[in-house]
Length: 331
Image 1 (cartoon, rainbow, N blue to C red):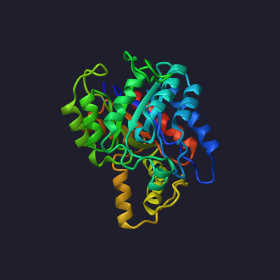
Image 2: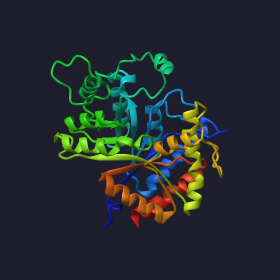
Image 3: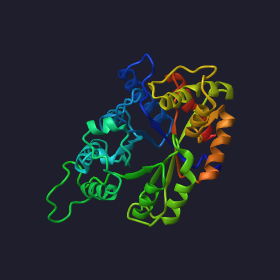
Image 4: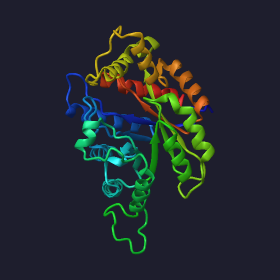
């Protein structure tokens, strides 16, 4: 059996808004994709918290998770992730305790410590700019208490939430969360879909420093990665220009709504290098290229699970990409 066929595959959906489209269309396409990958056998479907980004519609992450979970039957649905310093731990526990009660055994809570926004938005959310730098472990410990069994004489309880034991993952793109996840014996997810530079060092730190816990007896590492599969390498490379334009516009400070693919990009060598760095972990191509790329990626990382982000313009191309990926995976 190949490494790929024995590795769980999951989906990261940033709920992209298309140029000329609207949020209602995005939500309908999110549900359509979730149902599609559920029938294809994918393990989980995660949505991420971002604020004030023109082009991403998943700001009210817990609400959208509930919408997707209600429209599906089996697939795990969760956050990849919730930015813990943006919210009181009690509120997160109540939200995800509610979700777990409504959809038992299907909810994941991935946590990050970045703001998921710029400084002005951070101020609008009333977030302390220093929050998450030094107090993230304390916030995490408080959240875990609200989701765990109630302690004697515990005055504040998450209702609902207490005793639901929603699975917690730590997310990151550096060594900080990798080491914290290792110390606490929690699963770890690395965000190579946009920041692959520290991937191998973070995985090394996580595995070397891992301590068994009630949650895990050995390390469990998931890696997020960009992937675009099409019927040919040429078609996949063409479709990938949508994602390239998104990162290019991010560099230029412009709208990041999904743009139609183009035959050629107008960018400087420096911009091209920066975009290529962001997409350094991407696998893009036809079925055989995707198979070879994933097998190589798994060989290099030893990932226990892959979480795929497929950023293309048309919903039909996104659905087709996951069909091809499923065929390759089950191969």
